[in-house]
Length: 513
Ligand code: ATP
Image 1 (tube, helix red, strand yellow):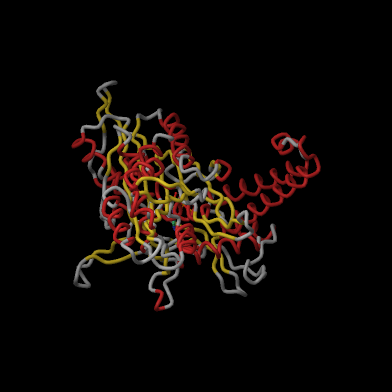
Image 2 (cartoon, rainbow, N blue to C red):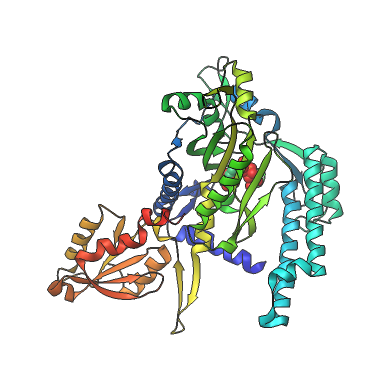
């Protein structure tokens, strides 16, 4: 656990030191769970967003984009259920005065059982050596099976109590499991209460005529209310999807995990409209598609898993999370929800406008069903960033910190480094940049010895370093160094563009999906 915490602290300080993420309003001691993206962070974030957008919108003939406003008519949130049901169960510890999400306390307890299972597996692997079959061990070992049964039983009870709004039982569960406040170790808990997560604000200048609004807690509703406008003007036929990226706001009860849980964050959502009855097929398809998209980034298959929901939201008939192994354990990265016709029907009801589709293939009018994919851009940023940050011991015994970001989304694709600051080398370096910059984000760096500059670019996640030296003056060749392998090659300047493109081209990465 301590090791995990250290690793997470390193991620946070690296993100600051290398200009990725800053605490918002830091000079005023910051604002809790609000962050700013700095010069490198904004590039990485933009590239992740582009990678998602291209995969969803550009590569699918039947998906189009949208950018709806953050402010929406307040009835939207009545219809969607957010006014009445967008609550999290919270609980306070009376001694530490800290507030927690009651469900998260229980889920974290269950997560700790995972660590126990992993320990059993490690022990057995050591004992059996090469003959060890992990799958068989997990399926048959009594201790592991008992742990798993316990996990299942706890989650089932939590799911049922939350569905039935039986908050007393949630508290009873916390007490029965002996869950203590992670800060103080105290088990002195208040009752569990519901807390609405929407931020309220006002539209209009004068106090009496101002209208109460909410900052949107998800981007999805902007898609639903525009469903018919988009369908008619794009002449899309069902099945088709609408994708959107944008800010969402939630007054989260607990927000202590850096950009994992923020109060202002960005979502990338796609609502896929389908014929009633076909939702299961599309739900399975999108689960698979989305996992493949994540896997294409190359962070390792073992770091992802599905979690099928026990407790379904009021609008869903099936739901699953793609979970990722963050430095603090497996947690939700993306949600895939089969939302039925709940949203469109609710908006029809509250607006009095029809949101139906005439399907001329079957000669029928209906309210489409919806399958949603919803991923948090900031959470994805954290997944990629934390997984990429690695400490390595090199052959000569020295250490290096390397940020192995997938090259396709790295903020800078190359750094151009003149060996010395004289003899015309900086001028050549600038000339190389002036050519490459039309295709790639490239930077110039002349400060410090070349070895230190390499290390700085490694830690910054830059896939290539290009060094201009005195030989360049004679033969127009440079040294190109690869971030991951540290291999260096002498190449003509004229080949740089294709060498870099080979590794960073979005086309090649997207083709892997
Ligand atoms: P959680 O259970 O972690 O609160 P959720 O189930 O409420 O998440 P959804 O409403 O399904 O989340 O939102 C879809 C995605 O938006 C999540 O998978 C996550 O990646 C992202 N997300 C949700 N809340 C936040 C937040 N407060 N900060 C950053 N990302 C978030």
